[in-house]
Length: 369
Ligand SMILES: Cc1ncc(COP(=O)(O)O)c(C=O)c1O
Image 1 (tube, protein in one colour):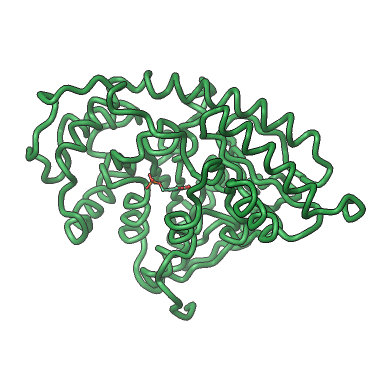
Image 2: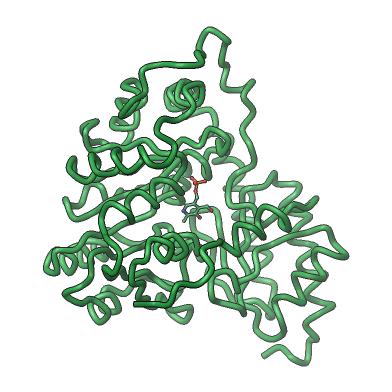
């Protein structure tokens, strides 16, 4: 088993203390949707309510959104808590979990904190970070309890087609393992009106997590969920008793309202993401010093610097241009940086212009192939 290292998330500390900036292209979600535009009235709220193992109106709306029965849904405090509960309920200390690399680092940090035996399989930059089921097959062992994926992929935004998910599902089934698919960014495809089949529809070996935090700009509601088989859901509810016990009831009420009126934040997000994707693609196409597949839906991109040091670029961006992006080292890919498309279009346009200026300064032309 891996040696226990620090249980703390380096990335989250950085995100909370170092990513704020005038031109913040590091944030992982669409900018905050205002409460006033949700049209909530004080009568819609109450401080306490019948939450115990799920607040029924919220369970029903989440189940309807996921296209499953309510007993397959766990409401959790963001995708973060949903992921932790899935890891804790589907595997025990010493069990092997296979996690894609690169990935959202909290998935690895949480698994390690639970003393799971974390093994990695690659999603290769040269292949546009696509999921290769053969890489999973190679890494799978009789000790594997869980395969962990993100769809859309964080950090690259790459989409996993249903046939590749099915192939990984069949592999997992043959090893009596499950597949956790963190779909928090798949919501961005839904917002854009694109077909976005959830792995929850593909078979009982799949466990899906997601939330309203990223694509809808509703981060403060902390409305997350997991969709799994009813037995695993029951285990997660019981484990949740050890953590928050019950969520803040006003947030549950507001989450019900948000799910009823999801077209409002979705419409705003669609406009933001469409405009910013065009700007990002024009920018990326014009830079010889950046390698990045075209943004095609979604809300993040993960350019690779052809030459030079990403940390130097990030320092210059922050120090001189009040602009932040996420250094790739937080994903184990230090020659990349992650760009979020969620900020207001004027902010995004200024932010990428600043990236261009900073690149011109820190990556000399003769060094670029
Ligand atoms: C893949 C992934 N999962 C989960 C989270 C956390 O989501 P939430 O805010 O819903 O807890 C993030 C945040 O960046 C993420 O990128």
